[in-house]
Length: 171
Image (cartoon, rainbow, N blue to C red; front, side, top):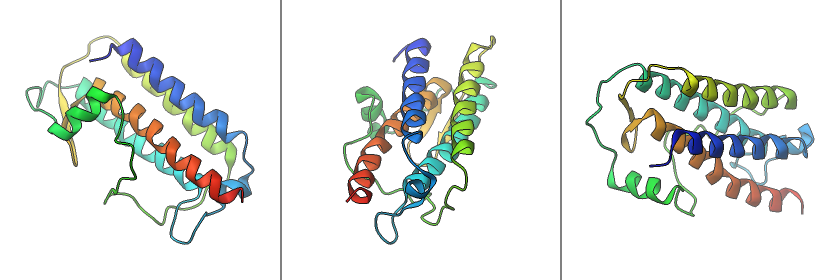
């Protein structure tokens, strides 16, 4: 298991990557869908923000309780955590909304990503952490630190999707 400092550093690097990339696109480019029924980059950003906000809520709950502390994650999740990465493949998630609204403001996306990073750092800098876990819908139980690692892995996983979208919208 990585230290909290290492997890926070990795998470911040991933957020910084996404905020840096955001500055290179126009709003029109962010809204451009590479193919019918696929997400635009802006929708990917909205997905990342929404999912990370969910992960933060799970971190807060896990840090505030000792419930489920003996519960485990699935073997598939354990393998991902050991590799510190999602599998290098497109994954289906039944909880994803294919009809995410398009972003209407680049600055709002930047503000939300910045706020997420600040919230996560404040959360782990506060004293008095408990050792609870909360249930992931597909991978069973994660501690707050595991939710943080999962959030970083999720951000990095979508970089592959960003590359595929970039290739399709730049042609």
